[in-house]
Image (cartoon, rainbow, N blue to C red; front, side, top):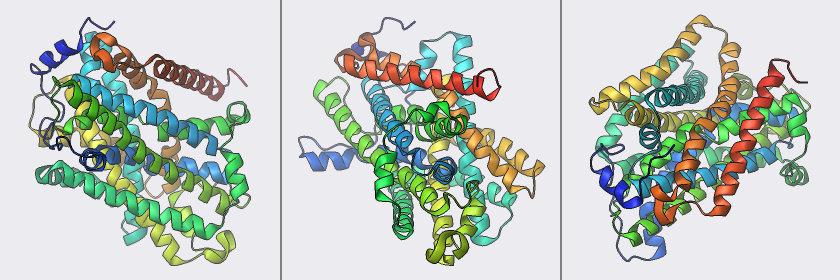
Length: 455
């Protein structure tokens, strides 16, 4: 149960606890009485960091495999997932701005010691599942581009924690700019490749209309849940509630808080729309190039090779196309690992309330994520197919873990004692709970179907 805590009390209580991502919290100035575009520019940035989590390498496997197996029929899942993501991320940003605390901190405050521990473990496992896709994706991209063994590539990606420490010293705006550049690379590469593939526009439009076999067909349901898990990311909810606080806002000033909520929502929705376009392009590419030719096309190495194979993709095949794919994969993996490491720190600080230097916290969260992937890579050394098989499973696990982040988020964002006038409006609350219930039911159905209890 949530304790009775109104908005003004929350502001006062905020002074007694450590701020979320303390070294960057409230460090970015916002212009006073400026026009719309100048104000939006000041608030633009956190949405980019959130969006990269929605287009990480895990999306690639599930989306391209979905297109290769079911053509455009899973585009409806991409659309619905993106709309849910926009709603939830706007909620997360609002929660952080209004309360001055992130989702992990609030969850820990309003749960028992045991309950908080369980939710922390689930959050950490979700971050590990996210990192499986990001680390393996980056490692494979390095292998494809430079011929470096996969295990070495994975170790190289683990060092990005050092890059993050350096970037944090340079200022949070620099991180936002670098990640935005990497996102632009991904968007341009896949936009170009889809243009060359000449997809069926009518099929694309029809693909955005949902059909019942998304649930009744086990194979489609498995990929549906994988796409949901890859699109709506649990760790991004924790991250969004924290980095929305990087802008300097006086929480005692109702006007400033309202402005911050408004522009944070606009920023989030714009960037997540870009992520929606990227995810659609991934599925469209899989459908246009591989449907009816090789429905098992779900490995990065196969995709890389296929883009240079005229027998599979026709006249557009070229080494340049393959290299662009690998460059986009590396951009996706590296941008996602930066945000994943930040989310790991937020979760650890919020739930465990660990007191240690920032570099120690980031090193611990990175090791927690990298170690399982590295062990698996060593065990299955030379069997890239087995290693990449982890990716789709990791995305399905994320969809299973998602309710444990979404339910607290909806509870907090809808609580008037905590949020005051900024609590969710009734229609938003209804939409959020419907989405949450549907997600939970689908997860249970998928598990029962997988173990054979239901057909």
